[in-house]
Image 1 (cartoon, rainbow, N blue to C red):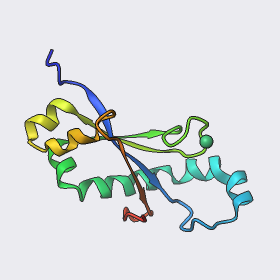
Image 2 (cartoon, rainbow, N blue to C red):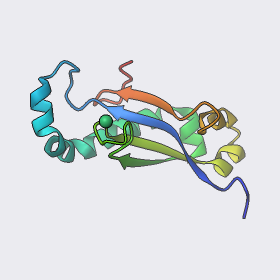
Image 3 (cartoon, protein in one colour):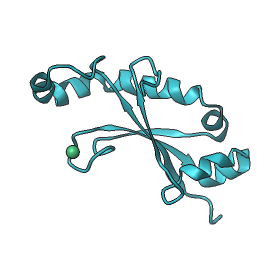
Image 4 (tube, rainbow, N blue to C red):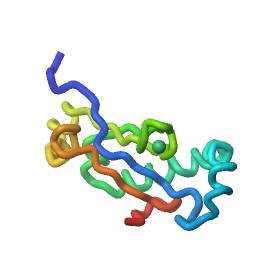
Length: 120
Ligand SMILES: [Zn+2]
């Protein structure tokens, strides 16, 4: 087995499915899990659009995985992990993705709106 044949999270991507960061906080607490379940497919689509806009990811290949504890171990900030394979990254020549390995400065966090655009 190739010693580089392993997957790692390059990006942690959080999608704002409320459309506003100033939404009613109580409303959010009450509705979060229900709303998250309802919005998850559309949120994944936003992540997918963002990934397809990134030529490194597009050419090296990636997987998107939902992670309820993406931003915090208590589950308060669910998000998506964009996972790449180190061997594929090296073979594609997009080695700048290696800097997003844990321990090399990564993974990098991104915040998107529902259309897949970065919000900060
Ligand atoms: Zn938390």
